[in-house]
Structure formats: C-alpha cells, structure tokens
Image (cartoon, rainbow, N blue to C red; front, side, top):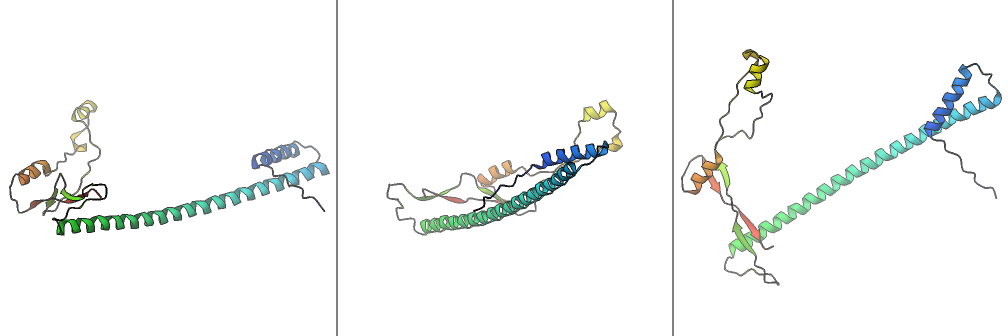
Length: 191
C-alpha cells in the first residue's frame, strides 16, 4: 500500500518573499542553473496555490456571510410573527376583560388580571404637524463678531412650536378644543 504524502502548503507571504529573492538574484546577474530555475518555478507554483487557497477561503467566507444574513432575516421574520401573536393575545384578553368586568380574573397563584388606564394620555391633534426640523451650521453671534463674519453670510431661522405640555394640562383640566384631544389607552396587567 502506498502512503499518502502530505503536500506542503507554503503561506503566500513566504512564497512571495522567496520569489522576490530569486528575482533579485536573476537581476544581479547570477547565472541561472537548473536548480535555481526549478526553485523559481516551484515558488511561482507556491504563489499560485496560495492565491487559490485565499480565493477559496474568500468565497467560503462570503457564502457564510450570506447564510448568516439569510438566517438573520428568517429570525427577524419569526420574531415579528411571535410579536404579532403576543399582541393579539394581549388585545383579545383585554377585550374579554372589558366585555365581562363582573368576573374576577385571578390566576392559580391568586394574581389578579386587570385592564388599567395608562398614566399619560396620548395627545391627538387634528392639525398637520411637522414631526421635526433640523437646523445646521448654527453659529454663536459673539463668535461671528470676533471673526468679523459679514451679515450677508448669516441667516436667522425661527420656528413656531406647539407647547404640548400646556396643551395636555389644559385638556386634562377640561378645556375643549376642536383641534386637539386626549386619548387614554389601556394596558393589561397581570398577564
């Protein structure tokens, strides 16, 4: 039976260094003998094999990254399905409790299940609101004076914002406004 002889795998860095050394000897005018020519060809082959291994590893890593991305997508989809089922469970349970308030909803450990109002109501506005504005390149007026920046390079920007804290307080105290209202949402406790 013949023995399998493992083929040596030369790292790309070593093969490149060896090839540079051989090329330098050739450029220096050293007479190329058969041994040197064989070493030169072997080193070129080592470089080709090292590059092939790197390409193979690169392809493998790209494939694994692709599989990981697909796995993340599958996991995210599964998570969304679980979250949807959980939300439906909570909403259906809340609906049952609201429709039948006279029943004592208590689990086997004596913990009560109930529907309670959230502490802060949601502010519903019937007027169009821009969610946010961003202002860039804000400069300090004193720095503009210090650096002698001409007024033609400056622009003043102002916005009118809705004071939602005052609006909420007024609505809570009974003020009725045709363009704003508070909505008290509920949450399920004890599930």
